[in-house]
Structures are given as C-alpha cells and as structure tokens.
Length: 395
Image (cartoon, rainbow, N blue to C red; front, side, top):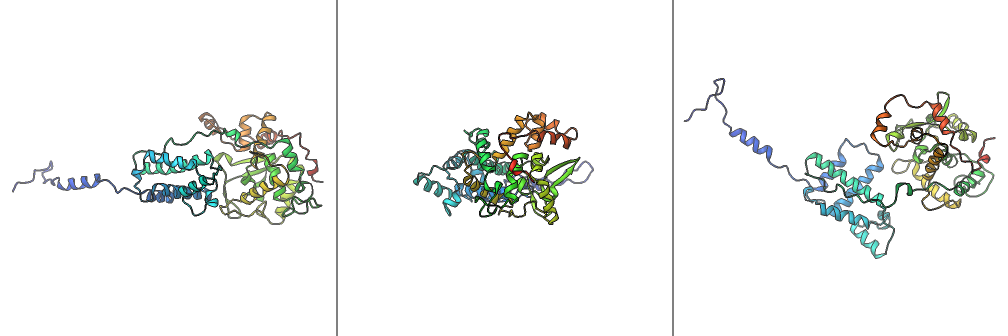
C-alpha cells in the first residue's frame, strides 16, 4: 500500500478525489428554466414596488409572451428572431383587444381584426411599453444567470408621433365652452343633469377638479386623491401638498415620478372662486378626502371614474377635439408658465416635471429649494386673459 504523501505539518494529506467530486458538482449546469417559470419568479420578486396598475400590465404582458412563445419553452431558446416576430405581432394588435375580442389569444385577436379590416391598432407608445416590460423580464433573467444575453434589447420601435404632438392644449374656444357649461354657470344637479341648465351651483369635484388642473398644473389623479390635510399654510402661503404614501384614510396615494412630490401654492384665482371656503367646509364636515364622492377605481385610482365622466362632459359641452383630453389642462398650464416668462427651474418644480440631464440632477440636491413665496409669485403670474372667469367668483 502506497503511503499518503506528508503534508507540510507532518500530517497525511487527503487525496484529491473528494475535491474532484465537489468541483464537478459546482460546474454542472443548472436546470434550464422555462419562460413561464422565469416570468413567475420575476413577478414574485419582492424588490418590485409596483402599483396595482403596473402589476396588471405585467400580468397582461406575461399572458401574451407565454401565448406566443409557449410557456414550457426554455428561456434559453427564446431567440432574437423570435422576439422580432413578437414585436411584429404587436404591430397588428387591435386596441382594447381584451374587450373587443374576449377569450381570444393574441394571434386569434390579430387574425380576427384583420378579417374585419380593423384599423384601430395599438399605437407605438403602447407597443413599446409591452416591449419594455418583456425586456425588463429578460434583463432580470440575465442578472439571475438564466440567459447570457437579452434578445429583446434594442427592439423598440421609433415613435413617428413627436411627444409634443401626442396631446394638445385646449384652444381658447374649448376653454370658453368648458367653463361656460351649465356645471359652471348653473345646472339642475352635478350628477345626472350636469349638462342641463338649472338654478343649482354645486361646487364639488366636477366643478373644482378642472379649475385646479388649469391653475395649478396638477395631474388628474394628483387632484382626485387630495385630502383635506393636503391643503396647508406654509410660510404664509396656502398650498397644495402632492405626496405619495399611505393616506389619512388608509389608502395608497401615488405620484408619477419622484419629482411629482411637491408643494404647489394655491392660485389667487382659485381663492377668488372660493376654494379655501370649500376646503374649510369639508374640514368642518369631518371629511378626510377632499372629494369623497369620487370612488376608488378597480386599480385603486380615484381618477378612473372622473376621467370617463370628463370625456363625456367635453362632448356635451361641445368642447371635444382631436388630441385633447383632461391632460390638455396641463399643457395649458405649461404654456401659461411660458407666457409669464417663468424660469425653467421654477416651471419644472411647479409642474412636477422630471429634470433632464445629469447636471440638473446634481444641481438639484444643493440648497433647500425655492421658498413658498417665490413659488406663489411664479404661479400667480400664470393668467388666461382671453377667458372670462368672473361668473365663478364667490360672492
């Protein structure tokens, strides 16, 4: 029997047979996972902090990806060419396919739409959103070591519609039609007869939300989720607080980006319309939500039902036009800032727009920001002189 070679300390060394077995075990390739397994792991990853709307969008994208590639397909078998075919299929996807072609797969919906000569297809922005979400899953799989490269990378389409052309501000004629509608001049009631001339002047969400949007630039859901406690007196200035997080009513408040969290002074015109008196009345009635009559939508947004109502309202007010919707108020507000020659930094802060470029981001971390009085001065410089609002002033 051959003795084991001595170690440096005089003790016998262990032969390398055990080491070889460990090494072979470590280098054995891991089991290849299917696209369904990887997608489920991605969605379940606790690092995600998605809103309900985003979570639903990921589930919808998963459904389409699994239908096209096959749920049992190994993720390593998803090729660049296959991803190109997926994008091409999305280019023929009809709008609202889940409602107009229910219980159909993506291929069946596309085929049915073509047979009907359907021209209402999802736009490039929506298509790219699906591609982004699918690409995010593949990036996650890349980080986890399931694949060696992301086959979806770089497959987004160039959007032929410029960002600034996707929505237009309301024209002067549209604004006049909106704010001379019965709900602003006198209607039968603000629920079912808001378009019928009457002697009632209710001032609730349907009255205040459009005015706040025009004179403050807030997004629709930012307004709809406001609470009475969000109207604050800061440094002698009445302000609206736009914040994310759990509300006083125990509901989740959301903002679009980190820059969206901000303090916006209340425009003097809104004060003349009686907004502060309305807020105080809500407080005295013990209301938590500023607009308690707005229900939560199925995705947790108070803006859902209001958005649908406002689309109908534009038609009844004869103020409907292509490329305009509630978001157009935000464009009017931005134009108002430009007309008032409000500086870019102040404008971005007031509107909650994300700054672009690393220089701006670095500069924004210095100092304490603008005082409420400076923000108020800039905000109150925004005027709409071609529109008569005198009939809205509180008496």
